[in-house]
Image (cartoon, rainbow, N blue to C red):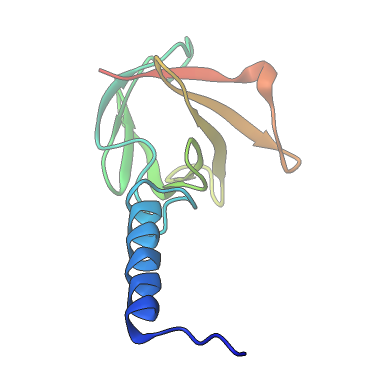
Length: 129
């Protein structure tokens, strides 16, 4: 004897599947697909002691306390707690900085990317307000 699914069973399976999918998307189980910025717009203090003691991130521009450093090319999550920040410089020709960003309790840990890998030795923390 063959067992067939009734129309109510098929509808129940579809509704449950849609509810699970909506919950997974809302809680970003599979990452952020909407290009949510990992570091939101604002002014932040950092542990960097040279040029970036305080930084101001806008949607398109990154400033330190003195002047505009460059334009933000990429500022988004790549998964639930990690992302990347790419800044193109206004000065010095074709120059850009790439950072691997990790969300931590204090704010974000920025590690410069060198030769395709994050350099943990020269990382700094951007404090959340």
